[in-house]
Length: 457
Image 1 (cartoon, rainbow, N blue to C red):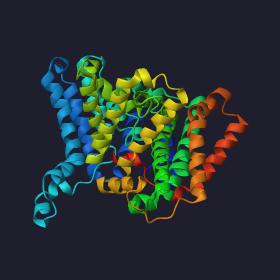
Image 2: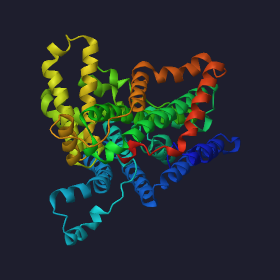
Image 3: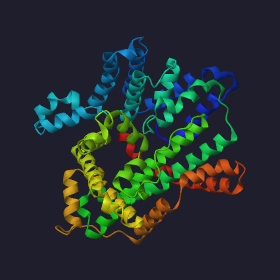
Image 4: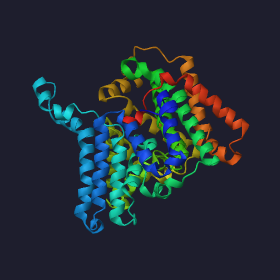
């Protein structure tokens, strides 16, 4: 099930919302959210839901052992099985295909157990959450163990289950403790509706429109010309931004409707002044997770270059099981290290030039998400004029859409607009009318909307 679906918006969400706030069911709220989340996730496949449930049960059983905080063995016992499940479902096929000649049918059949695996949506996200919980408990950062229903709700809560933000237990612990007494305030309702409407609009009206225009170039890179290459780079950059940003906005809004306050995942990343600054603003919950559970344990700044290369390669691999993702991670490692080595010069450049250069470098890197290596080679050779593309140039409508999308990205602070629902009150006629128009416009185009890009991560 996905957010940009009529069934979710007009059946699933109203039913869950009604049951959650039903006066006679307050004591069952954790179970309502768990059941709803398993139904939500179960639409991706029963096997996927089983993996989620087993991860939850396994980690909880291990971390509740009395000697868990004193036993490194128990920590490994808690985190290794979820990591193995992630490796099998997400990376087994990639590893086998990379090291064996699978063009031979007999060879492929020998490895069908690894190749014919459907990736559970969002497995990277909930795996990181259970691992962080176990590590935080072992470190003593979680002093009071939650009940099993609270822990299961923390891991499985459907708004953030398949594409984040990646939660730490401390982010939601207080809400989980008082879940049976949560009331829907006007502020939370206004904030939730604001975030949901804006997030859906960002996904459906902006990201999916760009995806529609990009489809011919995405499917056939040989169509790319030098002019269209410029369009593809920036159109896809804005598409992936508004696609993931839109999901995160909807997740925050849904959380608010049920009394949760999720951390923001974006802080206007395309206005970053350096590649290093970009990773403090883009997918912040992943960046902070990698910092706290990988970069710092590796030694942090004591071996800066080595550790940046390791964590960015890991970040690329987290995004997808493919060499293009690893290269993308290494590309960003080169950008971050390059900035670190040249910051005395970089930081003296005009701010506008810093922002523009960072945006271009980041946007060029997204091509590794769009194509495989053959597609990247075709795209690059066409972009630099080494080969001639066969496609038509982007239309005026496509360029105008791109310019409008860019102006929205750099010119509008969506969070401030959504938060103004609180500052001005739910009765604000102007804001309510604007959101209503935006929501109706989104519904008109909802049937053409696509699955969120980050669902495959």
